[in-house]
Amino acid sequence: MEYLLTPNQAAKIIAVAPRTIKDWLRRGELTGVKVRNMWRIRESDLKQFIQEGVQEASNSVRRNNLKYAEIRGVGDEG
Image 1: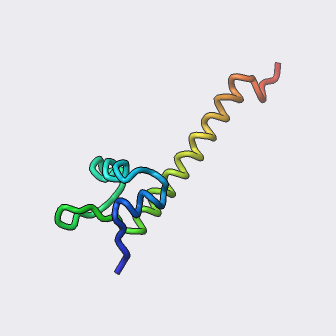
Image 2: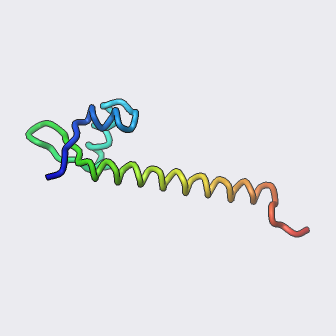
Image 3: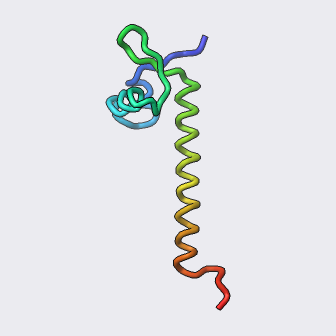
């Protein structure tokens, strides 16, 4: 059986407020399960959420670098 984290534990792992974790859970941005009226997050779901965030940030940096290169005319002949 996989270990379940509380919103407080998940918040400490990724250095955000527990309220942020709960908001993400309510909006469906972070996958969690409700045990009665309490949210719990599977470790694997939190790891996937983190990985998706890292990938998104990497893509954003890549897009910004391309835009910067276009503005500066890098690679243009002429």
